[in-house]
Amino acid sequence: MPPRRARPSETKYYDPSDSEDIPFAPPPPPKKPRKVNPDGRKPGRRPKVPYLDAEMKVAIKAVLKASELCQSVFKALVTEETLTKKDKSPVTVADFGAQAIVNALLSSSFPEDPIVGEEDSKDLHADHSMRDRVLELVNSVQESPMTADQMTKFIDLGNYAGGAEGRFWTLDPIDGTKGFLRGEQFAVCLALVNNGKVELGVIGCPNLPVDLSKPEGERGCLFIATRGYGAFTRSFASETLTKIKTTNVKNANETVFCESVEAGHTSQSESAQIAQMLHISGDSVRMDSQCKYGVVARGDAGIYLRLPVSDTYEEKIWDHAGGMLIVQEAGGIVTDIDGKPLDFSVGRTLKSNKGVVATSKAIHEEVLNAVRTVLKRPFPSESGGSEEDEDEAEDAEDAEEAEESGSQSV
Ligand SMILES: Nc1ncnc2c1ncn2[C@@H]1O[C@H](COP(=O)(O)O)[C@@H](O)[C@H]1OP(=O)(O)O
Ligand SMILES: [Mg+2]
Image 1: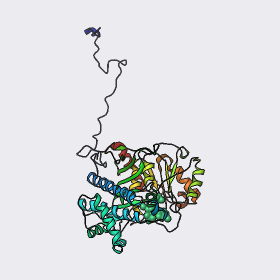
Image 2: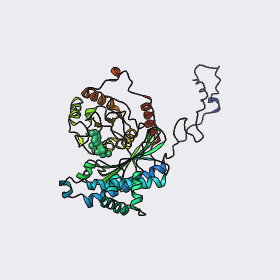
Image 3: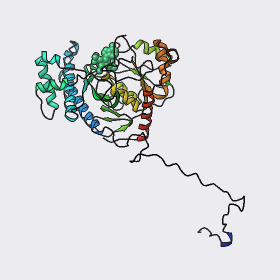
Image 4: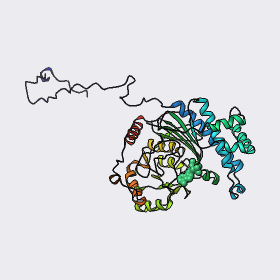
């Protein structure tokens, strides 16, 4: 039945002075005009268009090609014999080859950008048979072949000193050489730093299972992040990007931690004490290379600890730049063992920092306090400093923006 229409005598005409029975809602105050930029975004926010899109595409292509080269070196050169003889030549060949490929691609797309790379070609000048093996491999994955001279020049583009000004790339052609030789985890790691801040990170992990719970399943993962726009993963085989987030556990004992396989790269005895203090019962996940940052970023583990084993070792920027950004953009926090942000503005090493504590956001303070206790580092009140400095606040704001900005296509 249609609703009954009010008869004229029933219709109430509203006069505010007339009766208290009739509810009167004052009109809302006029809205303040929202400040927006011409393209509609709030002031201070980055445009919701792909940021560093061209750089990201080139970085992905370079990392995939270099990963392909490393995989073919492994198949062709890593044998029982090289392993028993502890022959490092396969890794040398792959290291140089991967750096030549990445630098060639970067310099053709961004000729003005300097590169901080791990390798230089000195050793190749002294060993022509090694140089020719590298050249053959490089040309097997290159569209247009290069000469030996061109290849060594591309490798040496990686000798930039880094620093606080301007933009530069930083490259680790094979991070985790020991893992590479064992047929386990290694990574090709590329990042773009601008005025001391990491803006883009792309890490290729050829041996990392797409799903860690299915170690026999598909392998080969890329991790990609641009500052302020979130972190993503995709498999080597498919271009579909999936947004990744760190774990949302509230307590450290609800997650696992990962660390280096090599006891010479991190203090495994101290990490065991920290795990005990945090009531983490399971074994640590030991894995080589920046794959550890990827595993934390996608929530497989909640914690990555890198605890100094030597007073003099300075971490290298190419060992952390991409991974740090990927974890931050996935919602995590990355500091050194004193809670300081990693400082990429001081040259080729992280000389202002000691070690790394990378975790999901909610548990960072808990983990850091355990690290400080076990390693006997000063707590902020003792050192007089504040844990949250300006940089960290800015990074947190960027991560929030990433949360809002949703996905990005490549
Ligand atoms: N004493 C050390 N402390 C921390 N990291 C180190 C140390 N010596 C070498 N490394 C670096 O650790 C990285 C591998 O880390 P992981 O153990 O996580 O796979 C390599 O880049 C390696 O550098 P290098 O390539 O110069 O040997
Ligand atoms: Mg490395």
